[in-house]
Length: 488
Image (cartoon, rainbow, N blue to C red):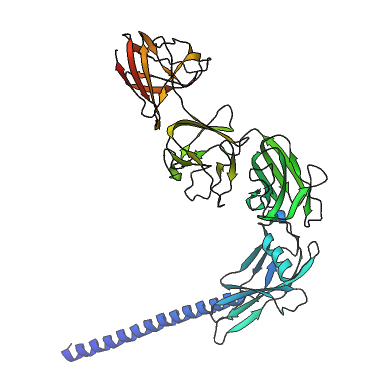
């Protein structure tokens, strides 16, 4: 075979190969076109299956109750509707109007895109019926609703669903706030200082007060600072009556025994109950002020000790400086909490957090104090510690009723001094002359230090005198130190 024939065969082969490649590419491209065409047809079919725009409701006949005002009363749902195969986005507007108004002045809720439900709580729906439509409590009110969709094609188009009807029976809402006032309460008859009751978490028409009440009377008001409307004593101690005018009877509930009470008021039922509790209104008390150990740092205020046998009584025993003080019920740094403040030197009242009053007690002389609060009768006692000496080394021996009173320093009430004869023997420092020997005492840690013995405890550590003579003994109950000068 010559070179010309070989060249001819080669050219022919290349032409046949190119033709085959063209056939293969044609087949592949045809398949792709068929594939994409089928996908497009399937997508259009899906859109068409969405159907017409339609709306439905969770209920067609609803009776509302304020006891469930946080619950969902009504939910509307709607279908997507169709964009007619355009791929355009769709937004929705919910319209609600009274029946027969032909949506002339509907409430309009712009729901945006890809949202297919709208819910209303009992409180929302009831408020809307009463305020927007003038519905009457206890009477069935007829509503109509529809959904309007906008398809954002060019040009934009709208669809309007069928209209659905809903029957709703609203209620007349009772107050969402309630306050107690009266001379049985800590804040008396000042309506601007009335004490708020707490609404029940499950039923907002039920209110609860827990706190100390003294002998006296009380009633309830619905708005701080306003004496009307009020809820007063009804036919008996278990019923209340709604009072809206001064001409109506102003009968009040009575407390005959001071204690801590739990009072429950049910506004819908017009009933109430008062149960005496064997516990104080607070289980923690604090002290703040420049007279106190931590000054005005309320977040670090000094906690009082609650009496384990009488939970109404709280006590602080320790050093107080010259200055003022009062008693917050917590350590919140916003200063908005309730506090016990000065009514007189021996009585106190419960200041309502946020009120402008700011009545404090004053310490005129630094010293070691015992401060006792009684939340049952709102009393306070302040006593600066005195120091006495008793023992076989002292001139009066162990006759505690004749214990020798040490002399308090003129400016520092924590420093006490005895100057006089001592004999061989022992001694310690009681804080009073009670003969039952159950009082607190300062006892020996070592020759120059001491600690406060708690009355009734078994420890009994005493100092000793080994040589008769005159001594100057100085005790500092702030630093818990003791100095002895003279013969030892």
